[in-house]
Image (cartoon, rainbow, N blue to C red):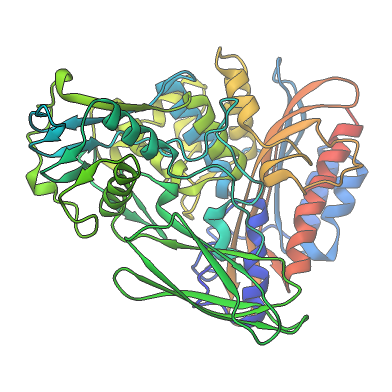
Length: 540
C-alpha cells in the first residue's frame, strides 16, 4: 500500500483511490526500470503488426501513454490460437494478477470442498458441577475468516471495497455479518458440553506455523475479523464530536475519538494511532456531508486478541473464566504439539468450503489472505515457512506447461517488484485452469467485469462487455518525488471473456510506467483498460 507518511498531500489523495483496481500501492518510490521502455513509435509499429483493433492502437497513441510499456495477449480458450499479441512473451510488473498463481496453486493443493476445522480442547477433567479443572485451548487451524463473513446461504460475504483497504481510501464498507460468529459458535459448544466454569486459563495454540510480519499486517494461524478493529466514524452537527463505533467491541482495546465534525466541503482527514498498548485513538475531522468513514486498526498480537475475544464469547454463554480476559496469550503453558486427545475435544468450528476462501481472495484482492495461501501451501507439504510455500507454486507452473523461467514470484499477493511474468504466460495459466475439474470454482471466484469485486467499476453499467468477462486486476503505484506525482508502475487485467460472437477467449493486458498527475488520471487508466476489453469483445 502507499504509505500515508511518505506521500505528500496531492499524491496522497490520488494514492488512496488506486486501490479500486486492487492491486497494490507500493510504498517505494519509482526506481529505474530493469530494461529501457520502448519508444512510442516502436510500440505503435508492433501494435499495427499485431493487427490490434483500431480502438486499442488509438489508446496507445494517446499522449497519456507516451512513456508506457504495453503488453497484450488474447487467445482462444480451447485451442490456444493467438488472436492478438503485443510483447506477450516479455515480463511485466504484475501487481495483484499474481494472485491468479497463488490462488490456483492453493486450489490445486486443497480442493474446492476442503474445510478448516478449529477445535477447542479441555486440558483437565470436568467435575459434576461443570467446573473444568484445567485449561481450555483453541488450536488455530489457519481458518482465515473463522465464520465472521458466513451468510445463511453458505457464502463468505464481501463488499466491492473491503475493510482491509479502509485506511487507503474513504470508500470501504463492512459486511453485515458478526465477525465473532466462529468464536460464538465454539463458546456455545463449550457450554453445551457441560462446562460452566474454567478454573485454569484460556489459551490460543498458534503453533501451526511461526507468525510473520508482512507489509502492513501479520500472517498468523489465528484470524478474527482479519485481525482488525473496524472503526466507523459518522459526522454529527458542525462543531460537534463525530460518532465512533468500533467492531468487534472488546476489553482488549479501549477506543477514544477526537474527531470533530466540520462544514460541508471541508477536507476529510482522520488518523488512527495507538499511543500505548491497548489504546486506540482516532483523531481528525470529518465533513458533515460525509455519510461515514471506515478506518481500521491492525492488532499487534493476534493470539492475545483472539484469546480475549474467546473468553468474552464464553462469558456471553454463561461460562465463568477465572483467568483475566486481557493480557498475553500464555502459550508457554501449552501441552506438547500433537498430544491432544479426541476425547478431550469439547468444540469444533468447521469453515465453509475452501472455494469460498478463494473467491474472497480474488474478488476483493485480499492481500492478507493471498499471502496466507503461501503458508497453507507450505503446510500441505509438511513445511512451515513462507519460502517453502512459495516453492510449492512451481509444480503448478510446470503442470501448466509454462517455462519456469518465465515466472518470478516473491509473495502471494503481488506486492513485490520481483513478481514478474508476461501476458502470454498468464494466459497459459488461464487456459490450463480451464481444463481442470475445479475450473468452475476458479472461474467463479474472479470478479465479474462491471458487476462485483474490484472490477465493479472498470466498465460502465451500459457497456456491452459488462458481465461478459471475469478478470483479476492489479495496480502498483509509486511516487515520483522529483515531479511530485504518481507513477502507475503497473496496471494489469487478465481473465476469461465470452466475446460478442460467443467465442471463449483468455486475455491479459499489462501497462507499466504511466505518469499520473492525480486521482482522475488513475481512474482514466482503469477505465481505458476497460475500453480495451470492449474492443476485444466487439471484434471477436
